[in-house]
Length: 104
Image (tube, rainbow, N blue to C red; front, side):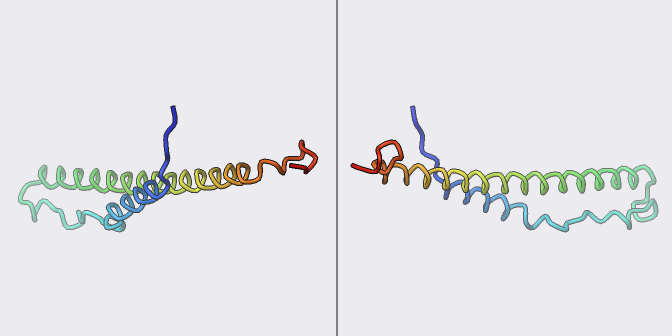
């Protein structure tokens, strides 16, 4: 069984991940103005602040994970390409093997 790896699809997936998570870079759910006075309730303000901090941490983890995955997809595409090129060279010059004394 064999399969084809389309390196451009790997690279396209990496670009898609970056484009989706790119707008999240630097995003921060502003919670510094969340006070009991602004919400009218102490517990509600604390809950909202805690949820906001969790959202910020989740966003950071999402961005980091997407960057790692994008980089891995790019690296894998490059590895497949270089392997294909190396194998292609071997098939183009099969009779130039050192084991054949250079004579076809």
